[in-house]
Length: 123
Image 1 (cartoon, rainbow, N blue to C red):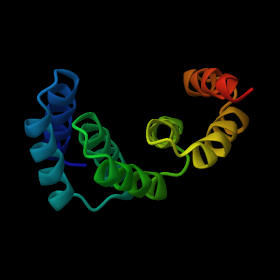
Image 2 (image 1 turned 120 degrees about the vertical axis):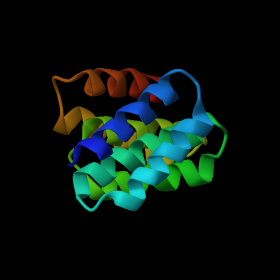
Image 3 (image 1 turned 90 degrees about the vertical axis):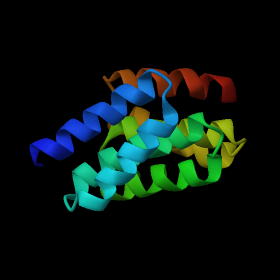
Image 4 (image 1 turned 180 degrees about the vertical axis):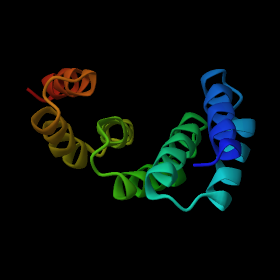
């Protein structure tokens, strides 16, 4: 990944954290036009998806998160954010096995701990 792309991704993430969602979205979309590495694309789509979900664009945000998961299926954070978005949208049948998979595949991680917490609501 070149330095310009990394700087844009870092700036987009910072904008997202600080609630500057339109600026974050613009930067993530700019990076998507420049990137060709699957893991960088996954990171970018993950950030864009979360940004869109935060602004109420649930369908588009979920699709970006699903695309991120497709590009990086071993990223526990992406998998957790997909599951949490399914929960937010009331898609419990999708979320429950996703959460269980995180616990199984990444047992000693913060993502697994959060997934276990979410699964406790299904008991």
